[in-house]
Every structure is written in C-alpha cells, then in structure tokens.
Length: 164
Length: 227
Image 1 (cartoon, rainbow over the protein chains, first blue to last red):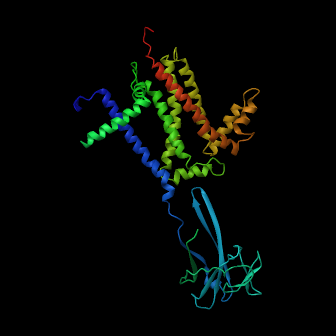
Image 2: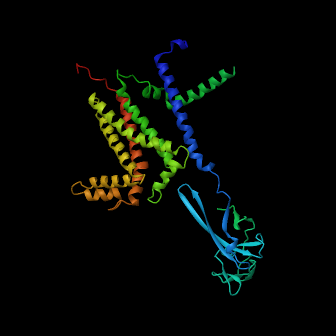
Image 3: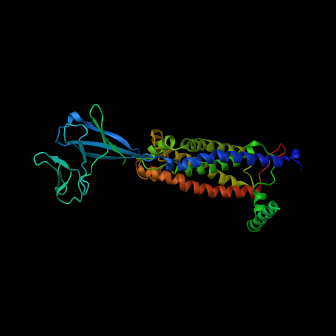
C-alpha cells in the first residue's frame, strides 16, 4: 500500500505513536530536570563578613565578635555560630590579629580574662596567651587565626569566609 | 546488506520473545480485539487507566522531595513548588490529574449504567469497577491531607468526623483513621502510607481483574430500540 492510500488503522497507529512521543518528551525532559536539580546546585558561597569597626576596638584589648552562617538544603536550614577576637596591636588600621574563639582542644568557646590577660577555655581550664599561643592545658595547637581580612576607609573590619 | 542483517537480527529476537511470551496473542487480545460500534464515551475506561498511570508516575516523582511529617510536609511542598526545577509541573499534573480522574471514573460509571453494560455476563466487571470508583475517592481523600495546610487539616478533621458518626462503631472508625483520638503526625503518616502503598496496590490489582474481564467478555454493544 502506498503512503497515499494509508489505511484508517495505520493512520490511528501513527497518530497514537506521535502523540505518545510528544507527551513522553514533554514529560520526560522536565522529569529528568526535576530529579537532577539539587545535584546542579552550587555549594555555599564564600563571603566577606563584617565583624566590627575600629573605633570600637581599643589597642591591646581583644574585641569579641560573633556571626552566624546558615546553610539551606531544600526545606532544611542549618545555622552555625562562629566567633572570635580582634586584637589591635597598634594604631595602624591594618595592624590586626584576628583569632577564632574556638578552642583547639574540643571546640568550646574561649573568653578573654582581663585581669590575667589570657584567653580561658571553660571546659578544661585551658589558657591561651594574647597571640593565641597555648599556655596551659590540653589544646594541641594555638587558636586558629583569620588571616584574610580587610579594613575599609570608615574602619569597618571584614573577614573572608569560605566554609558554611 | 547491513540493514537486512539488522532487520533479520531484530526479527530473530522478536520471534524468540514472541514464542515464549505470546506477544502477538497479547497484542491481539488487548489492542486489536473486535469492538462493537461505539463512540467517544467508550474511551473513558482507557482514559481512567491512563490517568491512573499518570498519577502513579507523578506521585512517585513527588515522593522524591515530599516528606510526610507535620514539621516538614508543608515546607517540602513549598520547596517542590518553588525550589525544584519543574516541581510546579509535576505537582500540578498530580493535583489536577486527581480531580480529573474522579470526574472521568465517575462519568465512565454513568456511561456503563446508561448503556446497561453491567448486565450478564459483565456483573463482576461492574462490581470490581465500583470498587475502583471507591478506591479512587479514597485516593482523593487520603491525598488531600498530605499538603498539611489549613484546608487539608480541617477537611480531614471533618471527613474523619463524618466517618465517626457511624452508629456503635463510629468512634473506633474515627480513631482507626486518625491513628488516635486527634488528628496528628500519626494521621499524616498513615494517610501517606494508604495513599502511596495500600490503595494503589489494591487499585492495580483490581484494574488487572477489570481489564482481564473486559478482554474476556469484550465490550458490550450499545442497546438499540429492539433490546
């Protein structure tokens, strides 16, 4: 039978297959995109975080700061808190030492004790000096430092964060 | 030469399968069977089956992101609608497909009634079909709770209270549906289980019986003035 004389039956078969094909593609492509979408998502973005202004920071006295980072995965949000101290070594704006307040032993928060001039960890009574060096107790290494920081014209101090 | 080789290869594969599976008989019985003179109303059964498959497919894909917990059900659906590529489409098809399926199945029943197709020897087909209609409504009822929004919550509160108004055993029915005296996390979880496992499994089984009976008896002719 030549194409001009296509039977009613063959016509129905052909249109059914064609319609089915169109519907299959119209649904199949979105479904693949739907399934792989989370896999194409970018990870958490690195960011500059403002942690305070120089005018609030006395030279030689550790200035405490905290900030929170939030990760969002689907409908789940996970917030993590971070903190540390800015120590101005001199009046020069860039002459800063920025320490993390996370104890290197078991990650408790250290705090500054003004009278004795040390950072104290409440969990195991560890002590760190004003440069973050270990003076006493179980910590295996000095306090971590935020080395990637900048100070703008108004004196705002920011640190660069990649994690979380 | 090459294409001939390929076509004979395919033919060999097909023949091998056909010999064992009876594909030709299956095709003839399901898709090439003789039909009495009908009209578009006779296609509603196939439309119902198609909608069942469509609901099954979109439903399976929805479970990739949906979570049946009171804490996250609503958020996960918000995420499907706004966060995932084409989530709105998958859920939209499931949502409107559900409404359409109730409508199509119901009109299918009306057509069978109007053309008196439920009579001997097709009584069992009709009875199984009624079961399928009820299961379709059950799917609608259980699915309605899953978004866990105000409308879902109160519709299910009222719906289960209606079930609870049955004399003597009403209180037990209400508690069995809710998984306790209150609408709770247990209600959401058991409605989800019913919606994606129990009711679809029952429906698939009954659709199998229904289709077997349709193939076995063939479709009934529309009654004419002499009947």
